[in-house]
Structure formats: C-alpha cells, structure tokens
Length: 116
Image (tube, rainbow, N blue to C red; front, side, top):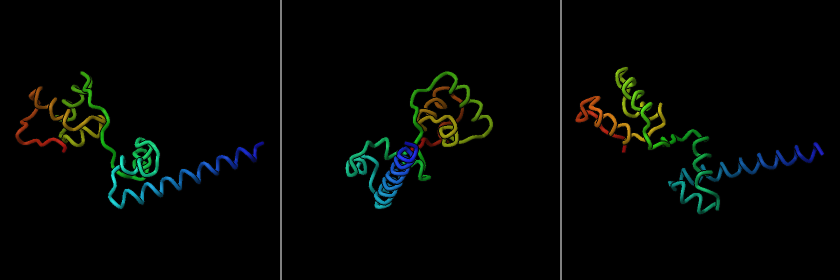
C-alpha cells in the first residue's frame, strides 16, 4: 500500500516537472500564458503559477484599494518608496497606486509615472 502511494507521488512529481519544462520552453519562444494554456490544454492560472515558480516576475493581483492600503501608501511614500515598490509590497495594481497618490494629493503626479 505504501509503495503504491510512493509511486503515485513520484509519477505526479515527474508529470509536474514535465509540464513546467514544456511551459518554460513555450514561454521562451515568446508565447503568452493564454496561448500556452490553449496549446497544452491546461488552465492559464496553472501556466502563470508555473511561470511564477520559474522565477518570472508576477503581476500584482489586487485592483481594489482599501482604506488600510491608502494609509500604507502614504507611509511608504513618506519613506521614499516608488510606485513600483509600493505596488509590489501591497500586491496592488500600479495604476491604482498612482490614482490613490493623485486623488489624495500625496505627491506631485507630474513627476510620477504609472506602471504600464
């Protein structure tokens, strides 16, 4: 029984490794995660997960800004953090961070540029 379970785990590990290699190969060719997912027949979330695990930069996820986020943005700006650093720390979309800074009047937005 134990041997069967062990073999199953090894098979799963091999399959994941194989999928990761295929995803990385396709990504290096220049395909986007949606295209890779269609080619391999797996969800695009899975593709993004494997790309993230392969040390590729991950885009911030959240787009909804909470009052707590606004306070943190103020504090981080005061300490000299850039929009990119703030969005990475708070896992917020860079454009949302920029809008908060502009709307709250926290900094001169002419000198700041949002993430593309």
